[in-house]
Length: 136
Image 1 (tube, rainbow, N blue to C red):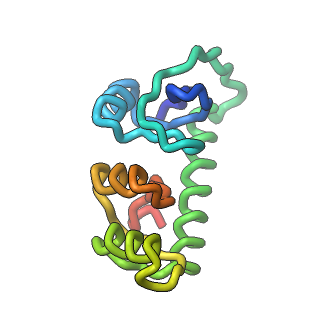
Image 2 (image 1 turned 180 degrees about the vertical axis):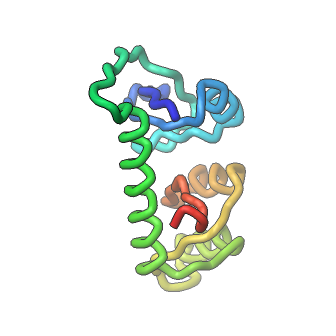
């Protein structure tokens, strides 16, 4: 895993974890990286200083483990507090946004294009990195 400091075209700075540099390039070219502040998908890597590794455990291993634990905790919280709507997520989000049904916390699946369309409509959604159930 590699951590990049990123900047969107609105100059918001944020971090992103990627399998390797090529994964970042592929996701950025496909518009799959979104600024967590404004949702902007045009991003670039910011200058970064190298991190020094101390001790037997590498910084990447520790950070990767911490990130995995945080993502698993997030997944548990979402599953415990939200209704799963599966691939109906884009439709359910629109229905709630336009007042056709009561608002409630939901989660489900949406493609990158469906997510972009929801954001373009002003619907507040948050794509999350979702660890597989095998990791849970």
